[in-house]
Length: 152
Image 1 (cartoon, rainbow, N blue to C red):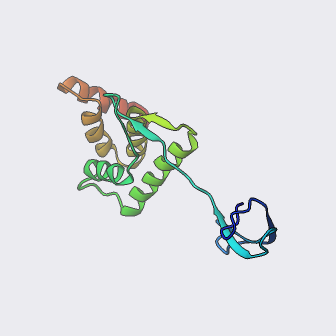
Image 2: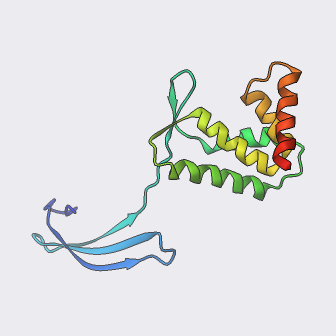
Image 3: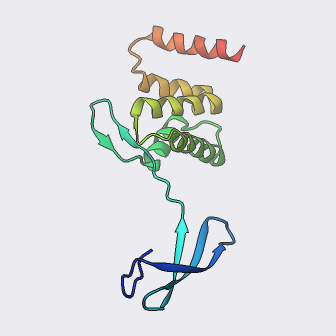
């Protein structure tokens, strides 16, 4: 760690403490050259993977887009805000745990469909009809039959 005062590269850790929440480490340091003291904080930096769209363009993951997609599918359905928050957290956790720097938008869509299938069957069909680009009644019937088989 560089000294912020003299920019010397060698510093000594005098004291280390974990925050009450347990998410930050506070270190008291002393520069071995100028003998000045300073504090540093360490915390985990989590970064969501970049989303690769079907056309090949890349964009940052936006939780607000995920929320709006879920809200649209769940509009006028008996699903609580807490359940939606849990679904969003689950999707984000799966993306983080994937360990990938980039993921296809299709993978995110599949994660959304898994959560909607668990939350509300009607919302699942709504989302699937747009996501899978249903073009006729037969595709709706297949999706509904699939839901019926999943229930058994």
